[in-house]
Length: 325
Ligand SMILES: [Zn+2]
Figure: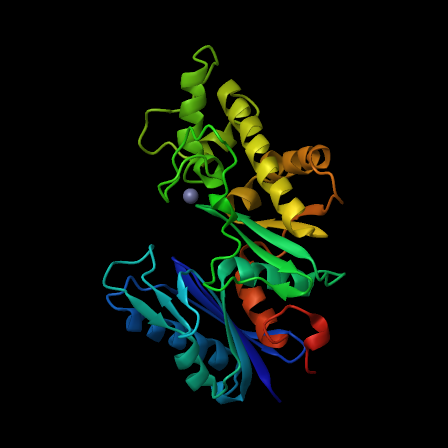
């Protein structure tokens, strides 16, 4: 028997799964992502999690034929490592992944992807139609896309393709993005920035009634969604979010002609009625080309680890024709 593995390295948790050659998962493991102190400590935690998943499946790691990894970046793709991640302390300058995982499973078939690319690979693999053209879009603390176009997963030469959260949607540039530039999509619509946007809308029109805790330092996106039905400012904010989100999605549709746009990330997963449904309605009116299916991922929080596994099963593509049963 040969086996396949998927690893999801996130800012909070590292997860691993081991599966049989048809994709059936037989072992799982999860640990907290260590806060350094060095990148090697993070690598060791990834290896320990993968070893535990193999033990859970009762298989020897060396019988794993291929492994996929979905991880936060940025990457040195040639070295198969994460470099200077923003979400870990400065002492974490390099997290080697491809080499150490290849040594553990005794295979050079190790595929490293950013988490949104792992997402599109998982969505493609698990979609009935297994489409060659689709986009996975995450709306969480940031916004980003994994793009599959003509059957190719787009990385870009430096691995930064799909950073669509930093596309300008508001030419007036009223809000400044965490990256320092003005008017970017995620400056308005990411989970971290929705509270700032609600405050701006309240200043624009002080006649709008609200009980939102605008001045509370803990004011969060969840506060807005919790009163979507009953608070006038919350409803107005959600309506405006739909406007920017639909512009962003229409730009993606015109750029890549996907058959399916699949949403993940905490903001979309927890608020499909407030976030995804309005995008579906508006995008139809905004595109001159074919309107894609717009949906929420069926894989929920598992989309990245499932995508990493799907990558291992399909030589980094999510294309089911490339499975070796
Ligand atoms: Zn930006």
